[in-house]
Length: 352
Ligand SMILES: [Zn+2]
Image (cartoon, rainbow, N blue to C red; front, side, top):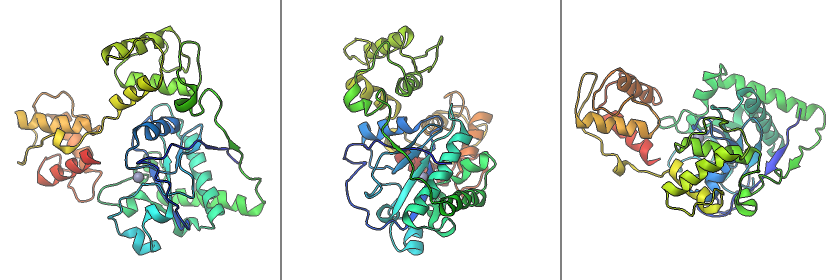
């Protein structure tokens, strides 16, 4: 079984420095942590928003998408962690390929996982790496802050060692029979660098990229009640685009060009920081009420831990959101009580 690899690189900028990576010594496995975001959705985000973070490859149930050439650096692990230096004698960003698993939403996990496994084997073959020692989870490198992709795999019943076994099995097939090299495909015309060359997208267009736009519209609060994100740009999508353009004071033409697309992605991926979300310094728990609780709820909502209504009441939903957040970090007790430590980690998450 061989999959196609699609190479559709983002432009250079904060996300893609163009710096050479030298020798690839290991692979860091990630997941996007953003349920439902697709490989192309990520590519478009990194291409237009250019955050100072990135990874080489995003994998969903349809694409193995390399957005940064494998001989260039990507920014996928904090340089302050030390495990990468200790194990491999180099910073991950200087010597590792970063691979992201897209999951959740409408992404078929099994299809995405198969590609993820296969691609790790492909990299091991290409760079002569051993799955057991040269593949490392982001969570292992940065345990205080990260759980990816171990937690997500576990929610699908796959332990880390099962994943490594699967990669080894896939790699045996590479070694056993000289594999035909994977096909490198340019994405289909309706999607390719749609951001650069095929915009604007409008009524009559169809394909995965239209579906990405529809998903972004829905995420931004523009419902598509009749057809949903069906990949076909019809009247309902056009109306939603026009409403979005009106709301954000853009030219209202119902077409998704670069300005509308940028605005849409900006709205959905607003870069915020902890200064936008002041947090109380005391200890709060179930039963507490007031503005401080409201601040906690707002911050939790921002980092996608739904605390229920932002009503200033520390009820069961808020307690549960705090507990779920705490469960991501080994340094925190999963007690559902907000205190200085939880505050510290929420702030880090806001700034991430
Ligand atoms: Zn990661």
